Length: 218
Ligand SMILES: C[S@@+](CC[C@H](N)C(=O)[O-])C[C@H]1O[C@@H](n2cnc3c(N)ncnc32)[C@H](O)[C@@H]1O
Image (cartoon, protein in one colour):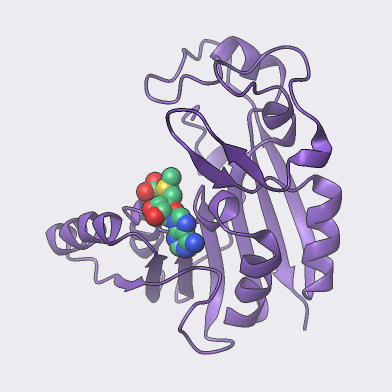
């Protein structure tokens, strides 16, 4: 949200010559970025045909040669141990059941492969009311966050397991945790036009997003 460059976060593995799967790829702009960064093969998985149609249109336009597969990232129709990197940017990382998609990412990765995913920070979710912007006080119980059901005018189900739950889940699925990068808004940042649920003023003081990086053990 805050235009933080990878040169600052340094959270991505070197993808040159690697096989990458993007889980919940949407427009697959992340996959496209990794292909440009030298990935050998990039496969985008998404459950929504309209999103994949956009991804396919952009793929044709850019000529990057991404492979796009319509599937649920909780049950991916691809071979075991066929990727070096699994990535999700607000895809499976919040829209899929972590007890399904993380084991699936573990299955798809080769030994030594890396899983990188971006999601809202736990603190921002705790301070997010059912409607309106993220506050400076707790708005919901952490116990309810693993599966959050929004019932407002944009209904849906999201998954925001706590750091403790995620650490246990990643380790139980053969991952070692390499990093948890908390993203703040930089000085001078202005509110995001589209994602106005958290202000730049809030995110200058507390991390509004976080990136997890884990490696599949040998
Ligand atoms: C907010 S978008 C983010 C994706 C991408 N980073 C982008 O900006 O386009 C979330 C995507 O997750 C996909 N998604 C939701 N549930 C999914 C599931 N169970 N399996 C695969 N994709 C899913 C949606 O279709 C959507 O394209």
